[in-house]
Length: 79
Image (cartoon, helix red, strand yellow):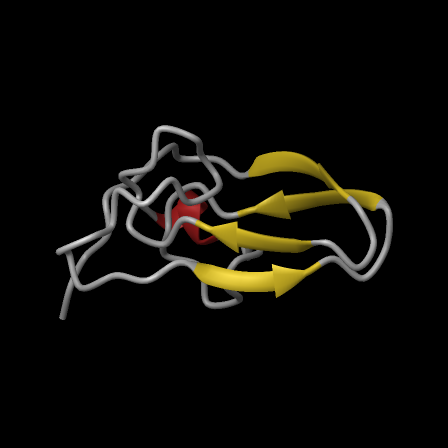
């Protein structure tokens, strides 16, 4: 099983816009964290697409080990 790089050991607080599509970085290599910049190519990882349900702030996983991708579930507290 592939193990992603840890981008940071805390979530990213991100404002999102309702109905807009986002691509969360799952590999941890992107320089545009928490979003994908294509750095996963050749790694076996793919970004996670999500559409924002509302204009709001969300907490996106920074450790890349969440069970609720792309949202933080607190897993970083166990690393």
